[in-house]
Length: 154
Image 1: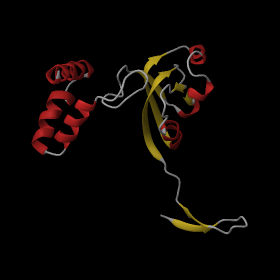
Image 2: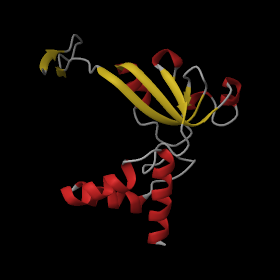
Image 3: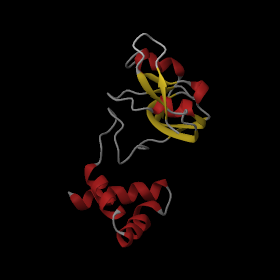
Image 4: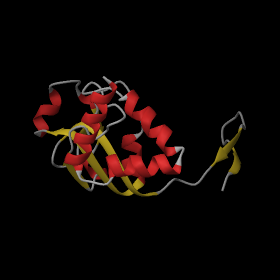
């Protein structure tokens, strides 16, 4: 639990200390990764993906595209190399894997789908329908259902 500790420095400030968070598994999605588990974030906000990977006993990195390690130098430079291979158990290429959230600059948030998700989650009957339509098949079926949903809203 939480504890308070006194700063060892001259200010003697009282601080809150908590035990380290230890995750069993982390799954993060980035723009690009190499086969070894180095991951590159090209968007404006790196979230905490690197910290989740380092806090987890196992960490899996999905990405928009698996690239050769040498390709990391092209866009963004070293500051974009967010996740290091020592903290990654496995890598998979999964284009669109952050849907309905964003993976900038590859794609933005799908606001209409996110709204439908939130509405469905608030009602057990609607959630069953949502699950059947979007979550009960494989990736191909999910993509087809999302595309049909997008056409309905157009």
